[in-house]
Length: 269
Image (cartoon, rainbow, N blue to C red):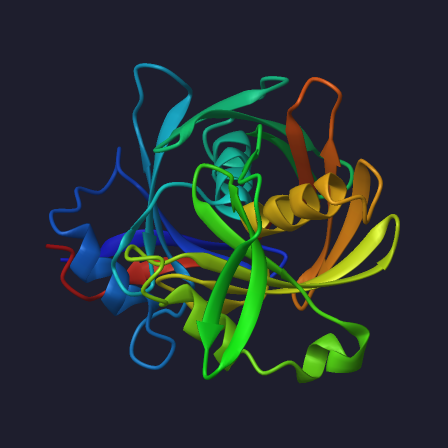
């Protein structure tokens, strides 16, 4: 039995999107692992199901590349809205997407190929979290964007962001202090309006970008006085903009693009 899919990416954060009104997925965890495999599947950071919703224009179910369920994905929710806009012809000013972390509204910026999503209000732990690894202490800020993030600010002597050893981020992500795992952002602030980050996502390993990770990093930088309320975030997959508005809401803006579509020949059960 074949299954129709669409592959989309937001700043290099790519997912396989499946319309649940057309396809019935029995075991999404298994399918996510198979279809996300970059050698034996289509290849992606995970799979997102677009489902009917009684509360919004649709409901988004997110599965990481290892099959685990994710609560929220800032890049994914923007791509879901883009799918509704282009495929379903829902041409509303704001498209509402239900997620496991609540309803998020997305505005499609048609002329630029970008979309802006209201990501909610970050929840930041008041005190820095410190863990010991191999005799060294690592300090981080814990931020929730509907999913958990550990934000680590890198010192200038730690070199260019392209040379960072991501094993450190992986070790933090799977540390015993975080029994359910945690997303990790390594952050280099280079001005009061700009930063570079790399992300290790629980369930997907390092990704080219992460929308909720960008917001978590911005929230930590703004709260600690490192940047202004609006900041440009450069990731390996591209540039995004995050603004922490006076109403407490964070807004994430970035590209969302179709890559391809096709028929997946494997079992969808």
